[in-house]
Length: 509
Image 1 (cartoon, one colour):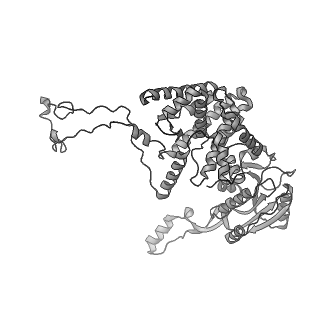
Image 2 (cartoon, helix red, strand yellow):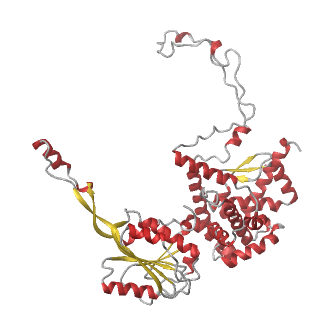
């Protein structure tokens, strides 16, 4: 079949697949409208956030064989976009990230269970999807990625797991991430290729048609000539620019462009937000079938909590040794120099009052239900915040408490040197049951002894499964969870703050 004949058929098949999906998923109209088809013969199905690249011949044959497979593939790609799967870190494990994204997209499609997306691959996917549902309370790309890294170290096993879920090529995602990271390091910015022109006008030829040999009207003879107009060129010296014979290569170069990558991510995040709002309007119609889709959309659109900013909630006013430029009066300073030559009348203050964290308790749940790897990554994340001089006073009093059903280890951090020693020799102790009450009793005793004179608060990193205190303590308390699923399942008391830090702890930043 000639390329000229198959390309319109493939485009028509793509439009039909999209329309059949819209009949059932009207709340995804904003997401479907964002992708622009880009026919590219001989290439695999792929998306870069703007263009949907496809091979016309392959797509047309797939639609003729099984129209549901095209609709399912289109929905699969759109879900990648609204879940922001296209924007991984450059240091991410590509094999496991690609597998996690494919599993999550197909998990949502299987949960929606639309007639127009049912294909023969449903049966091959069921065992893996059942495994995810049993192992994870919330199936997102981040939670599945973490599961694959911890439970499946064998690459061949991960590849076999992904095989029934494979739909599109993810190589452009990682290529864009690598180029964007390199540009950020070097300070360079990519240049966007020129817009493709599908139909370029023919070059103008012949006297009078190119505008160089047209006779001037009589009234133009008396016009005053500018300096630039006196530097004329002979008509024979003017060359016309020739239009390209084929603009298709130019269009191909636009694929996987890294310019405006942040803008593309923000636009898809807005599309996800609109999709989630529209989905809420259809909740009576969908019931639980759209539950995982809704949870993924909330995970995408939820504002990520910066751990440093969160700890500032527990800050207290105190003096910090530094030159206080904010309270420096230049009027008296300059007057003294002008009046006495080299004698300023006022010097800047050498201290400033700032809200920082000094006395603080960080409790870490080391029960069996909390993975050892998660605990260590949380400690590393906490170390990065504690080591930042803008968050804590140089002379601090921080207790890092490990606990399960009882307090198993306490480390007192008085300065950055103690913090470095703790990180070099940290050992996870516990891995038993979970009871939050012993930590609160320990902090109450420390307050009574005077060990914590200006306590900012208590942050408790946990999975949420344990016995909470019956009464509110006299200090601020926050329970920190690694993801939304754990936070949603935990019965945190109303007097405590509850926060899900997301996968910023478990994935490479």
